[in-house]
Image 1: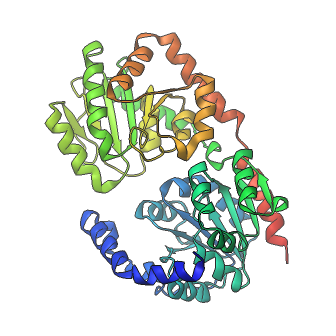
Image 2: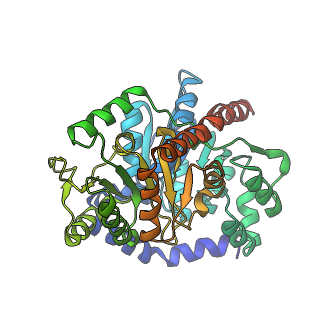
Image 3: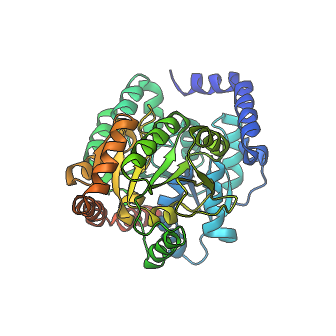
Length: 422
């Protein structure tokens, strides 16, 4: 398949795209607005740099790099696009009116061309894996240079790209420079045909997590207010519906050994908050909801983290973390924020989104693997019954993060060189 047939398929799929957005809008109010942006009809001002960060995780990781880009020139105009409401909220919170922000249109040729004709970007920065063929093709056609920052390429994705050599060639020839996270990913891009001289190993932006003492103090103060200073506290972060039952079962088993333990359960998507609440209530566990301001005390067994933007604060209240999306076939969510705060980590077997990061954490002893709710509970209990083991794992988690910092500076140096290029 080449780009022509890819584009034709998207035009044919247009009714399905509308249906998808409609379904999302039914489930989440945030998807009911700003539809013009989804199809390139929002009025836009021209920009110097277009940065696409997709969802909340990529956006948070990109914030330090974007700040450096904004500081690199006093009059630089930056536009940031996302595809999810949670990513959008992070952009607005971090930059306000300092940047132009819209959703990235769907990758239909007409929508993308209209979008780029308005923006006229000189440079395009794309985070991680958002290699949209029409976006890349028309950005190059309109004279923009494209930089893939913090690039990831799993073995599974590489195999899929190999199945469509013509489309893959179109994508790669539209890219000027790639900053990959690891040497393994560098090799995969080269094997696909990308010019080795234009690909650089720069580490992951996600290691450059900033954790200030004020955050830790706020977390500990909150834990004191909950009357859980000496009680075991663990967090199940960014969890998906297919994991709810396993997590709640794990906590019920943990309560047999530690009756005062507290689980903070944070669903990955806001539209799943109600489902998580229903599952927790039906389990018979004593639940408080963060969004409702429910009182948390010594009798509370589960705090449902059904708010946005508080994950780091929740991490600061906990001792151990289960990282979601890993007990289902999803590839796992980012474990580095929890590691940076200093939590012992548990993940399921599906970790292909962060293979190398998880391997570093596992090799250090900071992370252990679970296969289901029972083994999750066993690992949590091991930590809570052995304070020395728990402390060792917590320290190793922070050490891995500290040892791998520096990607922001490396990638900004690459970008600055590339920005100055004619």
